[in-house]
Amino acid sequence: MRPRAGLSPVHVAGFFGALALATIAALAAGRVDGPMQGATGAADAPPPGPVGYVRIEGVIDRLQARYLTRALADARAAGLRTIVVHLDTDGGQVHYAREMFKAVLHPGKEPAARAPEPTSPAAAASQGSDAEPAAGNTSRMIAFIDFRALSAGAMIAYAHHAIYVSEGASIGDIGVIYRGPDGKIEYAPEKIETVIRTLLAQAAEQRGWPRGPLLKMTARNQSLYRVTPPGGETTYVIEDDLAAWLADHPEVDRDDPTQVLVYRGHDRLLTLTGREAVALGMATGLADGLPALYAHLGIDPDEVVDLRPGLAERTASWLAGIAPLLMGLALLLLFFELNTPGVGIWAILAAVSGSLFLFAQYYLDLVQHFEAALLVLGIALIAVELLLLPAGGLFAIGGALCLLAGAVLAFLPNEIDLAPSDPDFQDALFDAALQGGLALAVTGAGLLLLFKVLPHAARLRSRLTVEAEIAGTSGAPGQSLVGRVGRAEGMLRPAGTVVIGRVHRSARAEHGTWIAAGEPVEVVRAELGELVVRAARLPPGEPP
Image (cartoon, rainbow, N blue to C red; front, side, top):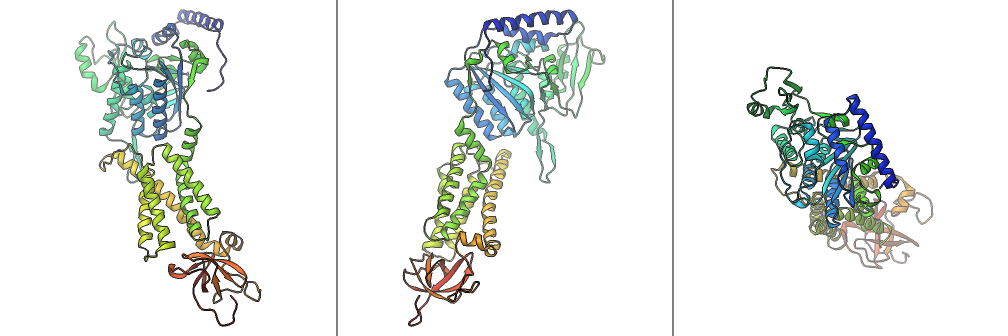
């Protein structure tokens, strides 16, 4: 939580006294309309007791959905009757926005009671928006927007019982877009937009938000009409509902522009400033900041329970952003270790990278036992091919396939159903394949660097394994060891250490064969910063 000054009863009384005087003065000047009055009246409700605070900022994605679900579950477990959700987002992925919308609209998966649709913006602000939750709900959900809640953010906001905004805030523009096969960004087809309109219609019914303006935030191809019956209050009707609405109100003359007027036409999405949202009943009231909101609702800041992510959750979320890099590094470092003798720094670094990767993916419910088993099996098969039982590449190919499958599944959300025809599954699979491919690309790029760069970088090469070109028996620099004969210091399986002259060198046996410790070996070539050797016989009388 950000630092907040405590509010004493004297401060609260002074605040509401000043607010009352300002309201009287504004009414005298004709500057306060119905919705503002309705929102102000809600402040007389009794203090809500302990309150939870949730902050949603940035792109709406799986991490945000998981965090919100966790925070709401914690709030229910703590018995919090009011939750303030601080929104600051330009939107994100539709699938996870729907999950978050449903989590707010139906806390604990309990269906909310239907509320009658208001007949005016003023009624909407006072009736549905700031009312206490129905008996089936566990918490009163209040959204606070001090900057922006656009697209998916606005969709989530309207699942709340109340929305408070600052004057500089913006809310709306719930248009659904997608990227086509050609890479062009377009609006989603009617089939997808209908789903979003249906969800917003549920929010209008269950939370009391004006249906017409809310649907116009996503209904790009429909007009929104401002309708003023003779002697009645102005209301806003979406094009799909206009015919039925006019049939129920025969006194309205559709051809009279003073009674029926297009407020927003086709090919436009409704986006409102904070003051416009309050005026239309699309927000409960204005609040300059959290302290002002808490004072308005009678909330003691000291009783606010911070439900923002803890250290482990923040760390896992951050690591998830570099998970492909961590996985690729782990595989690359493991390859280094398999090609050098003993257990050294590369094994330690590979274990660190792999542990960080698994921590992030396990914590975020992306990796479970099956994915981990595939990754371990792939590494084991490759290790068997390189170290224990050369099989012409069969084990290596099988291991590579297991690694590829494990890499993709390690980034595929477990809650996604295996339905190839489902667009959500297709999008998730594409993202998982992209991230898994990126991880393997990191490994491939590292190996390419090893092939192309390290043979020409003497200092790096000597630190990684050994020099390919080293001095001969005469000590002349640059003389190749190819053709020299030495002995295997330990078992070559097929990698290990050989002794040539009195110098210990890292080496591996040609064709993946095993060579017993103490056996004579001949240097065939220098490759990948190490010597490639084969079994040989020492010339009589020549020391190794």
